[in-house]
Amino acid sequence: MSRVALVTGGTRGIGAAISIGLKAAGYAVAANYAGNDEAAAAFKAETGIPVFKWDVSSYEACTDGVGRVEADLGPVEILVNNAGITRDAMFHKMTPQQWREVVDTNLSGLFNMTHPVWSGMRDRGFGRIVNISSINGQKGQMGQANYSAAKAGDLGFTKALAQEGAAKNITVNAICPGYIGTEMVRAIPEKVLAERIIPQIPVGRLGEPEEIARCVVFLASDDAGFITGSTISANGGQFFV
Ligand code: NDP
Image 1 (cartoon, rainbow, N blue to C red):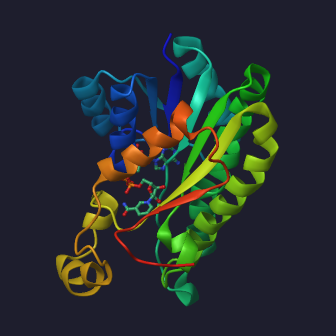
Image 2 (cartoon, rainbow, N blue to C red; image 1 turned 120 degrees about the vertical axis):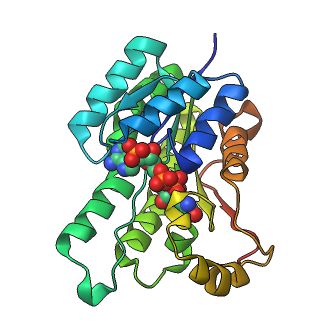
């Protein structure tokens, strides 16, 4: 029987490519989303991948959502924590709400989603968790104190949990994408992309969502069993320690 993979924010952008990549690799995939019913319905119609709506920033909603996925498909063996948002502002203008929304979704969302699947993975002696962080969590980005803090937190979470999961054959890894051509990045004005962003990327282009999806498919596979607590930087050659 196919292993069950759950992708948060799995209906659009990078998450959609991950859902499609995992399905093509033979997994039974469930794609979560937050509120864009139209995009989710179109994604479901196009891919045949079932979609499940809940907000990853709510612990109760995640427990309930994981329950619904497991009732329909079976125990979640692969969890991809991909859902993320930005609420950019220079720090002197950043509101507590902008801070909270980003941290609640991009950092606490990992706790909220991983906690309900963790015991089952431990009991079964197998699990794969892949957290989608960001280059901006590695290097920091002006206008994104909230996002950079949350995404850096994702990396600490990954490394700590990898140590706890190792004895139970659960791997926990992170991917730090650079600039990927999704709606989140296409929302940046064309002039800023062409004059300020693309020139920073040694390969000279934005990444494709499928290039992140292929990293996830590898980390989810049996072949990646010795890789845990790691970060894959997929950023077109931008180097950051
Ligand atoms: P998109 O905005 O294209 O898609 C975001 C997805 O996440 C949507 O499916 C959305 O659902 C879902 N989502 C957002 N908030 C929640 C929530 N609270 N609960 C459940 N689902 C939610 O994002 P990207 O594909 O660009 O980004 C995906 C991940 O990659 C994010 O974590 C982002 O931070 C990270 N990343 C992206 C980069 C890029 O260049 N694009 C670079 C580095 C990292 P709905 O459709 O309902 O809104």
